[in-house]
Length: 77
Image 1: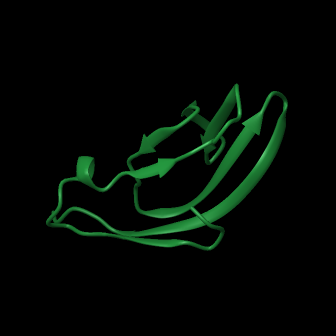
Image 2: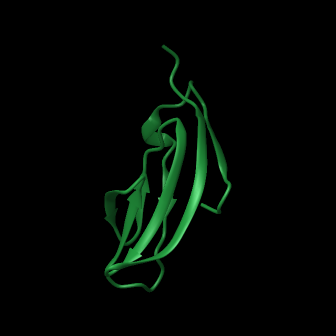
Image 3: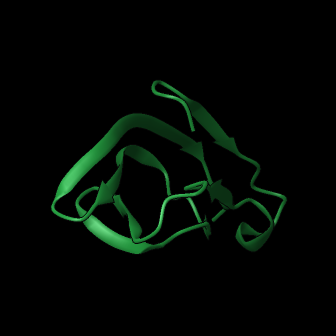
């Protein structure tokens, strides 16, 4: 996602159908971090949770890019 993206989750759609694709095109060994926690390598699908998040792409020991997003909404209680 682009820096400043706001995602709105639909409470009527299951979370597994509202995932966000992270793509690290042509970058070997790239890993993704959300709020400092490793969530995977290469291309992956992330299940968003409400709140503000920092998404980082790390290459080796250096962060290549960091964006801030906000996720709103979620499942009905």
